[in-house]
Amino acid sequence: MLKNKHVISHQIIVFEMKKLRVGINGYGRIGKMVFRILLNHPEIEIVGINDPMPEESLLYLMKYDTVFGILNESIVPAENAVIVGGREIKTSRVTSPSDIPWKNWGVDIVIDSSGRNKDRESLQKHIDAGAKKVILTCPAVSPVDKTIIIGVNENTLTAEDKIVSNASCTANCVAPLLKIIQDRFGIETAFLNTVHPYTNNQQLIDSPHKDLRRGRNAGVNIIPTSSTAIKCVLEVMPELGDRFHGIATRVPVPDGALTELVIRLGSRVTVSELNLAVKYSCRTEMKGIVSYCEDPVVSSDIIGNTHSCVFDSLATKVLNGDTVQLLSWYDNEFGYSNRVVDLISLMSKEF
Image (cartoon, rainbow, N blue to C red; front, top):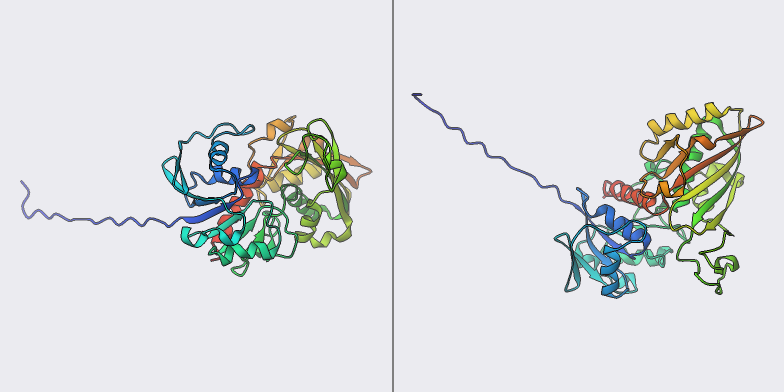
């Protein structure tokens, strides 16, 4: 039997880290993907969704998706809210950012994926309504604080950047790859063709459209059109100047895109040298952003891929030593939405 027994009581204090509170304005393709990614995120919580669609439609589209399947969570309607997997998410159905109760919901960052608010004046209304910062999930049509493409210029973010564009899905694919090529070989000229799935900006039957070709039936046509990626890339890589241009070709697939870059280099290169440079970058500064692929993939294989760019090493071609053709794949919905989530995390560090 022990004598002079000492009992020491240890008090364990657990500090629960406060999660970043995010609101989504616009529950379309990108809004839905960001929602699904964040639903079980350890550091970020969705506290509110605004979309003018009927409540029945919102609940239905939360659960079902033609491309990504059924959400494996319980979805229960509540008063001005929805309970998803036991978590309450506030809802509203207003059209103006000024009327969304971000302040009452305690929202830190708003994701505007509505496709309607692309100018600074409209986006500022989110901040006036109580949000601290705003991320736009498409190119801005008037100057915002910054356009960010992760892998290229995210280190330029500051605490003063309140309204930020995450550029476009295509720009997020090609800009990191262009940066790799520019840093290692130099770029004299570059031309882009993005082979892109149809979007809700197109028509299922021939209809009037300001872009006459986009007004044609998206389900049965290959449609040449413009690409907003050019402007976005030049914003984050101004050194390319007027030496970078391109187009988009819309095709009848629901998801999974392909970019073709034809680049005249500042130095001579072989296929193996170029592929090796990209492969090295994928393992170092572009890890998680650019993926190096050695398999003969097609567009459906890319669906659900989290990278901005999946470099197709089998397709690399070199002409006359200084002109190259490069193919890269990207999930224009899910890959891009993962960069939106990355940008949320980066901007939260600058409060």
